[in-house]
Image 1 (tube, rainbow, N blue to C red):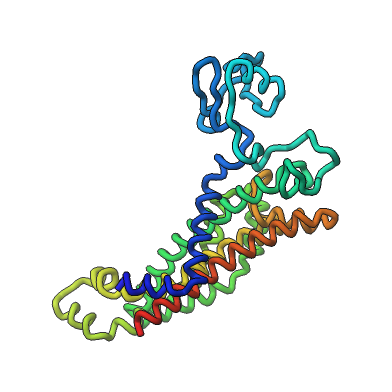
Image 2: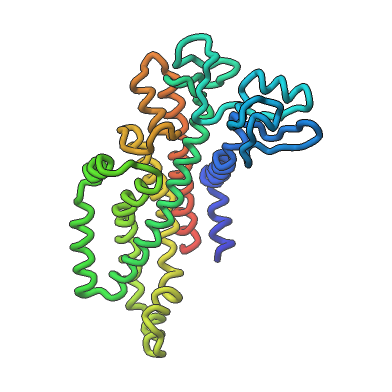
Length: 334
């Protein structure tokens, strides 16, 4: 069954290619520290090897004068290392928070041979911030999607399997909960707490699980009256076993087809909050923050265009993957 569904998905060239491209983007973004960083990948000095990405070394390690962390962008330290060895820098020698002081003009500066997409209004490399922002968006989306799917599936399963008053109370609670203004709640919380990745994730999670409940509930309402469920009850199977071992494999079809759309919604939510200034604190890199810079610096169109292009491509890939999953499951079931 799984092989047949995968073959049906693979025949959808747009969805299959989108899955590969999304996988490549995930690998590149999760390896951002090795692609864009102001620390060398490897330093060979006086016969010994050092890995500054994984460990902090003082400047005195390489013949400097200070015990503070080595600044590998300093020409003085670079000369000291070259005299007794060498160092290998990443493809992009800037991290997401690296401020470039040797710019030819005040930031934001247009694209050039050193900064392929220019710099932002604080003199930070746009490519590096896009790469780290993509990492943050995908990681936020994956964690939020996983937790939302688990919570939404459990609540939808209980509501659909038992029905009656439990289902009625659950539906009324969801109607009230979904009507709460998430944006105003985030504004209030941001004034009380310092926003960070996990606090924003928890607040958004309070509301994101609602989207999956109706689909899971409908599957369980339909499946609880089928013959194999009745037979399991007659044989004395517990409700927990029936829900998670008998009905869940069939209900997962609805969950799997909806996951890419939940993921895209999670990414848009974080980008929207960052765009409004309610998301991650500075100097965190995010796609929404780059879009906000583009709005505030209309004389630097590379900021808004680069953020818009990356976010649009990411969302299009997820939509194509979701459509491909839906069509492949329909085709295999048919």
